[in-house]
Amino acid sequence: MKRLYYLADNLDSVERISDALHKEGITDWNFHVISKDQAGLYRRHIHSANFIQKSDAVRYAERGAMAGLLFSVLGSIYVASEQPFGPDMSGMVYLAIFGFITLFGVWVGGLMGMATENQAISTYHDDIDAGKHLILIDIRAEEEERVRALMARTHPEAQLLRVGSTLINPFRFAHPAV
Image 1: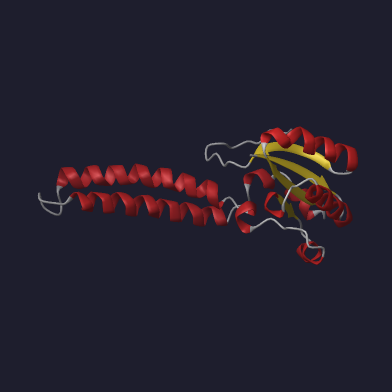
Image 2: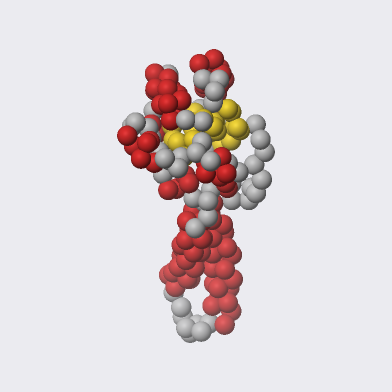
């Protein structure tokens, strides 16, 4: 799925955009707003972005899984070569070592990511702090032109910032503009 990032100046505009997109079949599951005014979003029944969308927990958990996978392979090789538990060790011990170290990496990475603002959103941090509202619209690729045309035609006050993906690539560091 693609994610369209729009910036709006006020909640009235965000509410009109939300209503227009709902009429076009975009549900709350695919429409999220990041704003300093969480109470205003709640009062107007506008779907706010959740913690996972605001933080980089998923990206860091993926990185932690890769590091954990590497260390689990190294740990399994060490245990196989040194045999600290004796020569008649079951294959389940290797599986347990492998699983524990990999899941530990996921856990540590996720904790680190929870303390980090989402990389795609951090670019617009100053705008959000200034009181603007970042709108995330998740759509299928074939709907992109229709939604972009609707936004340009009916809500020119909302600025298209970029087109991204809902998939999270743990290796990607820079986000190009539209």
